[in-house]
Amino acid sequence: MKLMNILTKITTLVVVIFTFLSCDDDFNSVGSEIIGDVNFRDSLYTSVPVAYSKRLERVQTNSLISGSQGNQLAFHANLLGVYNDPVYGQSVYSILSQLQPERFDPDFGDNAVLDSVVLSIPYISRPTERETVEVRLEDASTITETATTYEIDSIYQTPQPYRLSIYQSNYFLRDFDPSTTERQAYYSDDIENFGAQVEETLLYTEENFLPSAEELILTTPDGNDANSARDRTRVSPRFRVLFSDVFNKEIKDKFKELFFDKEGSIELSNASNFNNYFRGIYFKAEPLNNTGNLLYLNIREARLTLHYSYDKQDITDENEDGNTDDLIRDQEEWSLAFTGNVINSIKLDVNPIIAEELKIENQNQVNGEDNLYLKGGAGSYAVLDLFRNSIVNENGEEENELDFIKRQNWLINDVNLKFYVDQDQISSGAAEPERIYIFNVETGEVLSDYQLDTSFQLLNSADPINSILSHLGRITRDSDDAGEFYRIRITQHIIDLLNGDIGNIKLGVSVSQNVNITTNALGDTSVTNDEIIPTSSIISHEGTILYGNLPSVPESKRLKLEIFYTESKDN
Image 1 (cartoon, rainbow, N blue to C red):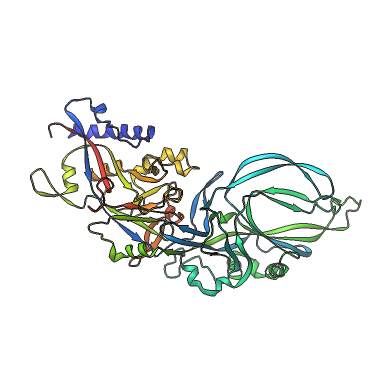
Image 2: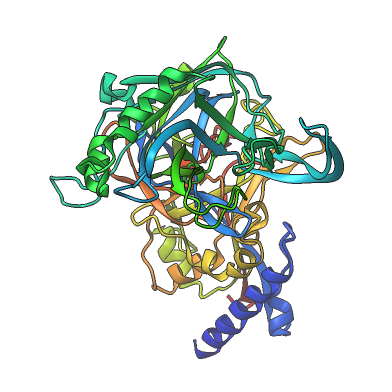
């Protein structure tokens, strides 16, 4: 036993180093290299887990962390738009958000006039090309600028327009749940249940909204010299709405009443009063001809900005008239950030056949199922129950499978779960999720194998597609780019289980938009509340169908737990 314990520790260390150096999908035995003894042999043991699906009726969607952008390793993001999943059906995503001013109790100055109001939300984009261009200005002069070509990283499926409406909401979003004094959780169906208050005042409608990857050129007056050309600024692609005397003066005047005319009031004096006074903005998406487009918005970067002018003394002689006692007009702005409670509404119109299959009474939690349904958002995930069956041991007696394996004193080299895609039911290609994710169903925690794979996370924190590859392998595709299978390595988890360091808890498997995110949220099924759900699944819009564990599944596609081990030939 002492020899086997020493060998186990040595082998585990070498396997960890080996898996970091190679992501080869084929198992390579390391047992003989470590032991170097003809009295040992490498073998494979195959176990069939019990596996079934759970459908979520709703999921928690406030304060969702999505991923990385530039130097930001994690940012809050929300989905907006319409996504037609080729298997699961249509999902419509809307957003309700509180706002907070950059400064409270604002002083707008003497004879202040609100010139315009701008709503701006940058898209998650990246520059692909830069070139020098000459620009002719309105005063006939010519300047040289750098023009940038961008690509929107976060738009999904072939973009089609949808109707986008923006409302001032009058529904109060509280910070704490009065029944528990904990932070208030908001769910994917809450906005639908809030009623007409979220659509208190219509501010803007775009009947055919389609995100553009073009950079924007913004112009502003050039200081106090009315005869000079306007200042120009090039900015990355974004959704931008201007309210001014030329464009929708009625809404500009409404913001004047809401904020400008409230200068010095208690409503603008602190966060609590402001949240109760101005309760939020609601972005409502509606499909057109049953189509649309879906994109991520880093909503925390959005701004509602009031541009205004006011009188000030020309102390530094800005207008160069030789007089420092006269009054001149100056420009200033007051911005509101989208912060506090931000909620994603997810309205999922599930394929009726799948909806029937996913009813709790139609999922066999004792024997398992032939298909596993994984869908992001307010979708579904799979539950795995390992080693729950009895086997006939070497003495012809029935024995619990886990007890049997513990008795063997095997030197565990590699353990993996292989999930085959049911290609007959899936539309292959870009709509298939690139990654899936495994977690402890009871706590939501990742497995110990995830922790051992942190070098990949550190090296690829800004590239989640290529993170945690040894533990959570990317989808393996065939020559037609159709997904074949996912492989999840859980070697250390099984070693810990066999050593008695952990209990045999159920495992959850979900789709994942970003495997670097390990935070969790809550979800409700038709019979239970507060299921622990990975955030990375909630922010994912994609879905897939995997083969399960039943004998009706072709043996070559059936879900299996493969344990590669070394044992003495004397056993």
